[in-house]
Image (tube, rainbow, N blue to C red):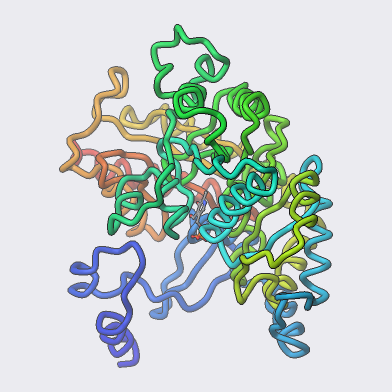
Length: 452
Ligand code: PLP
């Protein structure tokens, strides 16, 4: 059959990202997605699944949005691609830049386009270093990121990433990247009596010397590292610390951006304005490959004083079709008041996770901000005793959910963590959230015996 042929070709010719190659080649693809509608995706054999994680936290407007397809078709038929190198430009890229600037906080007043999140973070590092060169401080090159962070897989982004498998993969790292413990408010406020002081950003800055540090990068809410919402005051403290030491503050909004957390951008929850803000995923809801870096006015002003070639840029920087899709995506976000829906549905998701915690003693530490959520599984939650890693508790629960037609994701399972992420399309409604919670409830009940 056609299905069997596709499976064979997949196994033979398609080397998949972040999969276990040996298992994949033996077993073949789990699903071959072929269609989608709202929060549902359908496999080529006709079975539908709830997409509880918006694929890779990116399909924010849900599947099958015809308007986005139309926007792509219209632009492709007119002019699918044109270069933005040298001084060429195109209308969708210009209009989207204006729109992004108008949406972003503070004086983030210019944009540099890329095709995705990793490229955006590499670009932010290079722009930060280049900015310091132009300012006569070429020795400011080091980057501080946080433990548990995920910033992508290009070599610089991979170095900033702290999820071990990704950070270490193939031994490819750049030098001069450090990791601080996240969320140690007292350290970052400068309390040297804090027992965790040596792990904090301030300690690294003081040890390495502020004159050597280009930038601090963090995700406003850490995503793939386990869905960690920072405590109140943390982002403000980091921002202040960066000001104090003359270090650029980069916010990685690749997951948080475009409504995911109930505000247009994650940093808005804490009222901070980064110097550079990277985005991707939600800017097009995954309908086209697009990312970028929003740049503060003062940095932009320094960059545009440079009287030689800015020797950085991708073939697809400012891709006409991708930008047309981005514009339409934002138009729908605003017109349909999607951010308001996220705020409303946050309450439903909170209720749902509370219900799961009340019902199942292995569920704990649920956290929800907008429609970005996670919860954990413990053998004994009162003493926070983890499950034996060989039990693979979160993986089992996710598998049971899958059997009940709900796609979720276990985070950092290979490090022995039992964190389950939920991040459905932002268009989800109350009934659909209840259905998801019911499936998780049934799935936990079904494998509880197995886990103990
Ligand atoms: N930054 C964050 C916070 C991400 O979650 C991701 C991807 O998941 C990236 C960067 C990398 O983006 P991409 O996979 O588009 O390169």
